[in-house]
Image 1 (cartoon, rainbow, N blue to C red):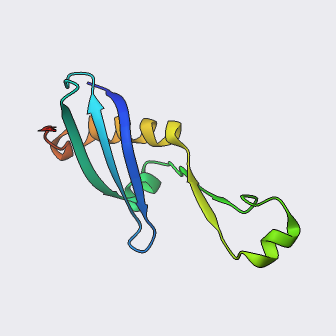
Image 2 (spheres, rainbow, N blue to C red):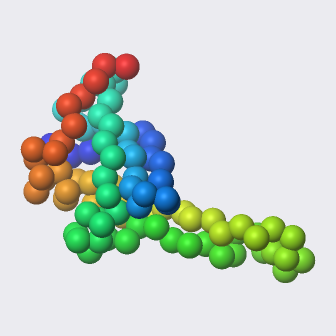
Length: 99
């Protein structure tokens, strides 16, 4: 049992959680699993897949105009974490839903 496709994810910065939607290799194309996991869980597993990208806007003048910090997610690290997380915590694996 392994995650075949990471369909979507959304980072809730204010609560420190990430919502993920994915398919396992045993799921059909019409099935989807969705879960919300605390980033503390990822840290406990030794994963840090969130990067603060300060260089999102390259031009210095534009940086002065826009006070924006952009957070990017390393999808490869996220996928590795989820596979490991659900192997160890099989009881937390969400049931598939037909879409």
